[in-house]
Length: 104
Image 1 (cartoon, one colour):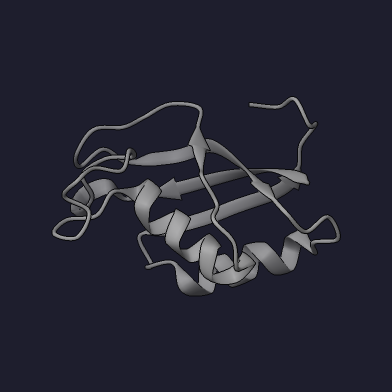
Image 2 (cartoon, one colour):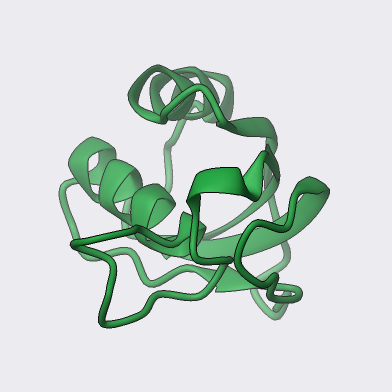
């Protein structure tokens, strides 16, 4: 397994904040959108963890998240590009990098 660290930025205007909620079908959270896009790319469940959470409408310029990928030979530049292609324009992955197995 492969621990991936990402730095993301987003305009939170249309989101319910970072954390997934039971309202994601009506107004999504940033976590919900990123997780769904990563699962499309990686083809397995991808629980995403963030260094902090934001409230409704709050923006982030460098929020750090991490997740575990089942594939160890990932091209992280390609992963970042693919993710940015799927994400809406108000969420961007600024950096994708390998993290130590114990990074959280």
